[in-house]
Every structure is written in C-alpha cells, then in structure tokens.
Length: 290
Length: 290
Image (cartoon, rainbow over all chains, first blue to last red; front, side, top):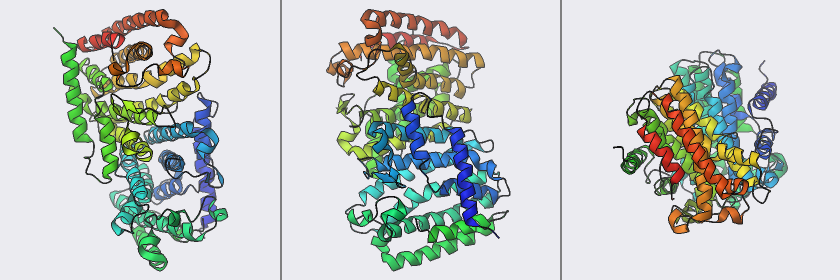
C-alpha cells in the first residue's frame, strides 16, 4: 500500500539534504547573505514542488534522483518568491511557516538580495541537470518571468480592493501558483527523459492541481487558524483580494476543487510508469489542512 | 580609422532595437509590470556590457549578431540590479540617468517585481542563444548569484561606515562590477564559438577593465557633478563607503587605473580577430566622464 505521509516525509528529507549540499554554506562570504538564504530555505516548507518534480520523474520510470537538480531549483525559486512577497513593500508579513520572515531577521536589504541570489541559484542548478538541461532552464525561465509567477503576483496585488473578477482570478491562479507547479512536473518529466505524451500529461495534471492548490489556499485563509497555517489568516478578506471565495463563494470553490482533483487524476494515464504518488498528491492538495 | 563614438552609438541602437523586440510590449498583461521593466530598460543607459559582449564576439571573427541574445540578457540582468539598488531599502535613489527611478514612477512593489522579472528574462534570453546556450546560462548564473554580483552588493552595503579595508574593496570591485563585465565578454566569445585562448583572454581583459570601471566610478562619485552623471554625487563619502578612494586615495586610484588599462590591452593578443573596439573600450572606461 502506498503511504503518502511516508512519501512526503521521505521526499522532504531527500530535498533538504540536497539543498544543504547545493547551497553555499553560511560561512561563505558574504556570510549574512548565505545565512539569510538558508534561513528561508530551511524554514520547514512543505516541499510540494520538488516532491511533485520527483514524482513526475518516477511516473516516467526514472529514479527520483534524476530530478534532483530541477527539484532543488524549483524550491530555490519558490523560496525567493516567498521572501520577496513577505517584504514590507509587498504583503509585509512577519511570520512564515511559524518563523520570523527573512527581513525580520536579516533586514530588508539583505532579504531582498537573498531572494535575488536564490533566483540566480535556481537557474544555476537547473543548468547543471544531466539530461535536457537547456529545456529545463527554458521551462524555469518562462514560469519565473513577467508572464509567469511574477505576472501573477502583480495581478494579485492589483486585485486588492477591486470588485471580484473571474478573468483576473483565472490569471492569478494560473500564473501566481499554477506556473511553478506545472514547471515542477514538466521538469521532472524532462529530467527523466520521459516521452512527449508524459510531458503533456504533466501539464494537464499540474494545471489542475495548481488551480486546486490555490483554491485550497484561499479556503484555508478564510477558515483555518494562524496556528494551523504558521502565518496570518483572514488577510484576503481584510485586503479585499480577488480569490476563489470572492468570485465563486465557499460552495462554488469547494465544487471546483472536486472537479479539479478529478481532472488531475484523469491525466495520469498519460504517464508510462507508476502514478500512485501523483494520484495521492492530487487528493492531498485538495484536502490539505495547512 | 576606428571611431569609438560611432561604434558606441551604433552599438546602443543595435541593442535597444533588439531589446524592444525581445521584451514583452507594455500592453502585455500585466501592463504596469511590463511598463516598469521598459521604463528602466529604455532609460538611456550606456549599454557598456552588451557592447562589450558584441565586441568580444567580433574579436573572435564572428558578426555582432552572434552575440545578440547574451548581449540582451546581460543588459536585462544589469538593469534589474539597478532597479533593486535604487529601492528605498537599498540606496533609496530618486534619480538614475537623469530620470526618476523605477519605484518613483511605478511604486516599490512593482519596481521590486520588475527587477525580479528582468532577471528571469535574462536567463530566458541567454537560453535562446543559438550556440553554446547552456554554457552561456551557466556563466550568467554564476555571475548573477550570491558569490557574484549579489554578493558584491552585500559587501558594498556592509562596507558603509567601516574603516577602509583592501580585502573588502577587492571583493566589491571583483563581484559587484567585475563579474558582469567578465561574464559579458566571456558570453560573447562563447556565442561566437571562439577558441579556448580567446575565452581566457576575455577573462583577463574584462577583469582588468571591470576593476578600472569601478575605480573610475569611485573617482566620478567624488569629482563629477550630478548633471554630468544624471544621478546623485558625493554619496560614497557621505555614506563612508569602501571605495578605491577611501582605500588608495585619489593618486593611488589614478595610478591603478593606468595599470589596469595596460593589463586590459595586453590581454587582447589572445583573440584571433580584430580587437580595435575592445582596445578603444579599455581606454574609454579609464577616461570616462559619466
């Protein structure tokens, strides 16, 4: 029987061990910069994106380690976006995963630069992938750019204090959250030298669960406690953000979450290898409690 | 006779035309993000790094266009560092090249994200180079990262209000300024499929003129007017920064500038093609007035 909790715990250890080896030690000059990068990288994230990257490689019959470098790259990229999101000129958050945010510990300037360096490191690691490195760099660059995660972040900001707007919601879900999740899965297939249908399956699977992830996030922001999430809650409503709840309401959002899980599971037939982890991850994303 | 002024004007037009084509138009969603990226990209920079990239390709006998994509990439990367440097939590500058800085026009959050997106775009463009794209991405990632330009920026910050320190000065010169200039020249050689000795020559040439560029910058900060530079002057002394002047004094800095120009010129014999532009650029960097 496949046990997702064991798979997640093992995947977290796997990627954290790799990151510890791949990221310059905290005593590398400039010390404060590397300490700040490590503070945010090792602050107990769920490691969903690297685990998805590994699971997509496994679903192509490759060992998890084939996807090690892109998995580390996507976690560096994701972590940089969190550091910059938390800055005072953005969300101005003091807590992330229950710990003080990077700028609360290292100051704004160092946090800004730690994020910048983590983005560069993401590309450095992606470029070191043994197989299909150039395709992997291209996927990462497109997902990271102005029409990817950064564009989604801008629309998310613009959506504050504006009337609910389905087109903006779709843009935010797709780019702010979806693009990195799609990128993680596609890079896993590329690093595993998977066949073209698997690359398409990865896109369909990850688009569905990326949207589901964002909807679950929106629901948790409205219903969970700060202790459960390790960060502030109720912030979306306070900022009148464009979310699945503001556009579809709670019942509509939950219904959409079910549909998307079904879409994600249906896409799995396109992979040549075992998809138990991807299937369990799709169900997990829809039902997560933090 | 080689005319550097014509070469610089022509090179600026060349790279600006390319950037205009390669950067998403300002009406691409999110509009404000693309407008902010373009504001800083088209604010009349000297385009030294892309012109060096092109000149290095030409010194390997290739046409300038062989280096178009890495040249555009290095200018995007350089521009992102300027946007982030100017932010209130860093240097808090209102003027850059005589124009309002990105955050003065678009706000801090959008400026931060415009910088982030320009870094991603730099890697996207580098990865599209027709020849040696993966090597070029690796050069760019190393130069951009925590032991490259970002590391130099951190040490530059740390050097404020501290006693003059030659080891820190060297680190700042090498990484804050030198790494991107070395990267520009090396990417030009790689994109031109130049021979190994040319790659070494590019490193020696660019290390020398990178240091010279930073020394000239330090001298201008102390001696030029704000009108000449299009930005605030006298700021290094006010912040008690670690500069060539604080460590070596004015005469020592000028002497070092002469030595470095000689070193840069001596390296040119390692290129297989014509090096008039690179030679003129080395002299220009040491004697620049803005």
